Length: 473
Ligand code: NAD
Image (cartoon, rainbow, N blue to C red; front, side, top):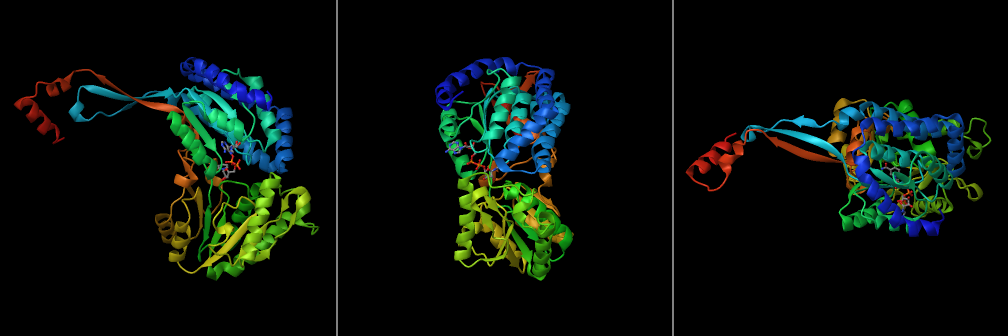
């Protein structure tokens, strides 16, 4: 479809899916599993996997290992996990009934919401489009998927794959940018699942309010990383360098800035510099030649990353490592910044590039002051060997998710809910949390004995006594 036909066809596509939704609602778990398995077979085919790896390389120059870890393996595992558990998760669950309502039984039925919209970002352009689609299919909904206009090669791959596997009435990709997104947001979907920036998340929520569509908002923010006086320097440097520079810092849960105990500052920064050299510059020819560091997605995002750095330097920050860039290939080197302060953009906006501000602290009060100054983050990392310290940091901070002594890995556990809090997101995904985001948990009570007739009108002394008795249970 061309862009202009996209806009003009959006309403009729929405209606086509809306009409089809009741049929999907009645589909069995086995039918839904076979659809998810079709996606799995498609991407497991070596030639398709290669096309996907090439597409993401063309969009982000992402190393193959990072494509496999961040896009392919994650999706295959999610399909397996949801397929394995779906029958159990869809089964109505009996819950207990209070004594005051004795004689009846209570259940939660899981029913499809109906029609859903998924809007996805460019940073994990395949995985963040397909994972919510899996939940939507598992839940028995129709889906329109709007991938990012920045990761064009991957969006083309998505469109080709889903056109091949699904009828338009069930799953359809609509490509485009803001105009297409706005047209889609104008349709009264039953559920809107958005992954992207906090700024656009607010636009989505406003649009959803017009239709009272339910929303899942998977947003971003500034995820702090705490390294305390008891932390093991070598292993914390290893994990932080991996989490920060994976996908060139363009990860929603990447450590955004570091709070390090002042006693560890020198040892940590020395070790981090040598780790970056060892990983990305083993030949000594320069990090720009490393195949293991990707590029910034677009000119707009590249200019923004450079301006974050120049703003910090103008306001007094010191570059203790890196600070290099190359316009012709949107290259930004791993960069370590110190002497940062709250007036700088790097300490207020999500950095989303391989720039790491490092802030020494002396006590937990400094950590609380810094983390509570900013909106609630998507992730918060703690590096410490001291159990009581860890509990104190957990008690005094908040985040969508936390990893102790590593980075990013909570994303890989489907048993944990994934998502943010307020500014970093609303609603959760992964495994059954993702599935139920696309379902209505319907409360069903079945009256067997009719005991509530004691409460019916006309009210008399006996009714009053019954009510007083009920309040005792
Ligand atoms: P973005 O908000 O700019 O765009 C996301 C999607 O929204 C795209 O498909 C885009 O076309 C659409 N969009 C953009 N402007 C719009 C508008 N005015 N109206 C309607 N739709 C609009 O985000 P991005 O730059 O693609 O992604 C980066 C952001 O996403 C970061 O903030 C990152 O933290 C966040 N993110 C969050 C998660 C998570 O799971 N919580 C995962 C990945 C990325």
